[in-house]
Structure formats: C-alpha cells, structure tokens
Length: 209
Length: 212
Figure 1: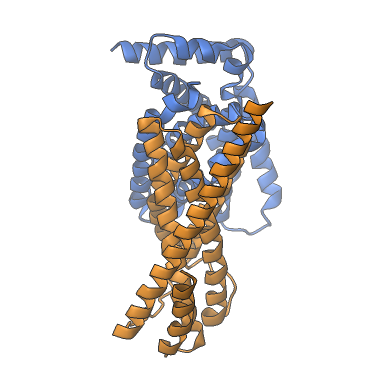
Figure 2 (figure 1 turned 30 degrees about the vertical axis):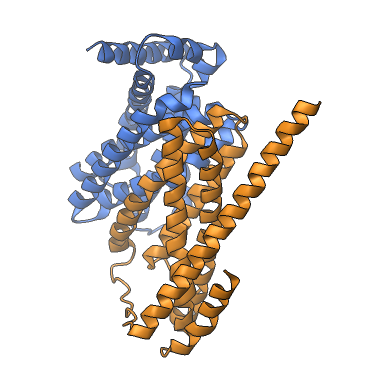
C-alpha cells in the first residue's frame, strides 16, 4: 500500500512537462474523486441502513463520510495551492469544483454537528442516514447551481486549458488515483475497526458493571 | 383521499394554533421588516439594485429559518409529536402538514415584506416573484424535515441554520438569478428541479426521523 503511494509520488513528477504547478494535478484530482466516492459510499450505506435496518451500516456510513470530509478538506487545500501556483490567487470563486467542495465541506461539517448533538441510538443512526442521503442529492444540484451562478457572478467564464494527457501521463494519473483510493480504503478499514473495537469495549464494560 | 384529509387537518391545526397563540407570524414579519431597514444602512449610497436583490434573499432565508425554528416547538412542548406518530395515518402526512403550514406563514410574511422591498429598494418582476414562490416551497420542504431533526437534538436552535444553510445555497442561486438575470427561466427550472428532488426525498425520509 505504502509502496503504491510512494511509487505514484515519485513516478508522477517525471511525466510532468507543463511546469511544476501541473504536478499537483496527480494528487488533487484523485483526492477529489476519492472524496466523491466516499460521500457516495456513505450515502449508499445510509440507504442500506434505512432500507434493511442493519445497525452495522450506521458506523460504516459515518466512517465513509468522515473519510470523505478529510479528503474533501485535502481537496480544498491542494486546490488552493494549485490555484495559487497557476492563477496567482489562493482562492477563486470561478473554479466550480472548488466552490462545490466548499459547499460540501460545510454540509458534511453540519452532518457531524447533527450526529454529535443527538442521543446515541437508532434515531440518531436514521437521522444521520437521512442527512447523508440529502448530501448525494445536493452534489449534482449544487454543481448545476454553481455553474449557473457563474453567469451572473462572473460574466466571463474562466477558461482553463485542460491538460492534454499523453499515454504516460494518463497512466500516472490512473496509478495515483488507484493509490489514493487504496489509501482511502485502508484508512476506512482502520477507522472502522477502531470504532467497532471502541463500541465493543464499551458494551463489554457495561456488561461487567 | 384520507391522506389528504389528514394533511389538511394537520395544516389546519397548525394555522389555528398560530391564530390563537400568535407566536410565529408576528415575529417573522417584524424580523423581515427590521432586516430590510438594516439593509438600507448596510448598503452604501449608490449601490446598484443587484446588491439589494442579493440582500433580499438573505432576508428571506433567515426569515424562513426563524419560522422553521418555531415549527416543531408546540409539538415538542406537549408531547404532541408522539401522539401524531402513534396516530393511524401515514407519517409523511405530518411532514406535509407542517410544510404547508410553514409555507403559509412564510408567504404571509412576504405579502408584507415584498411590497416593502419594492417601496424601499427596487422593483420585482413576475420572474422574480415566481422565483420567490418556488424557493419558498423548497426551503419549507427541506426545512421542516431538518427542523424535526434539530428539535430532537441537544442544541436545537443552533443546529437548524447549520443544517439548512448549505442546503439552501442552490435556492439562493436560483432566486437571485431569477431576479437579476435576463434569462430567468433557467433559474426557475433549477428551483423547480430542486423542489421536486428534495420534496420527494423529504417526504420519503420523514418517517425515519420521527420514529423511535
């Protein structure tokens, strides 16, 4: 796992021929895609919870969204660095993806607020699940809204030259994408195992008392 | 048909409670009017109408939040919600009734607030009004579900705006766009899409939020 990530990090810069700022592309875009994937996974687990009533899905949904939020924050940071390097500003409202991630970041922070202010139990699990489902509906609608908002907030749409990917660049991109996804998966498993252990311990303690 | 009778009865109940107690609507009215006066001082001289339209939407969203924060208080105080959940009717009827009642309050507040806005700031055309109505539906549909969630939490008043504001961003985009863009129709379409998607989602998921 670590090897895959190191490989991606070392191989990636070799292919970059559009200046150093373009190299962050190999990190930024996979992280963003992984964050979407985590949010989707969280919502899917939430749907399973509501549908089948399996309590295990609650923790899985929470952990997936937690990972998604971490990767979302990383997307904001790397995107901001990229914006600074290539456009000269730390933040730009004309980058739809960045604005969308900011909205999603706020949304999922509210998810944690909701979760931590409800009493633990089935009701909390279901409320969190419903909110997680709202998230995946919010993603496309927000994206649409932000695209439309561009028209009146920025009459001239910022045209960025899309990187024309050659074969090796694409391969590197795929490799780093796979690496980031793998990283997310490992983190997900680790956190899930930790949280489950925690829950088991608490249960055990209650039994012993 | 029984479903709609239930919804009508629940809406009527909320409107009647409001008529007797007058807890929510006067507060919303006073709030939105005070906000408009504050905006007069917040906008420097010579600011264009566009800025005023933007602020109108801030006022609308926060007025709606004020109404939504009060929405489930009567149910919470006297254990009415438990009774409603136990009643032999579809639980989504509770959500629909509450949404309609909140919508009625919000529209009533706007019947006063929008003419005041026109008087103080800038004219509103038919597209802008349609935008306001569509956004009202969206924010009440989503908001009454979120308010039910927040009401069960420890920090209810604080939590509600945090839950609703990220979800309200597309509504604000649509509303402001409908007011200032020459092609307002596209924004109305966005609002209608939002209303449809989130109303169905709220309708379907309300049951999970209120049952123990």
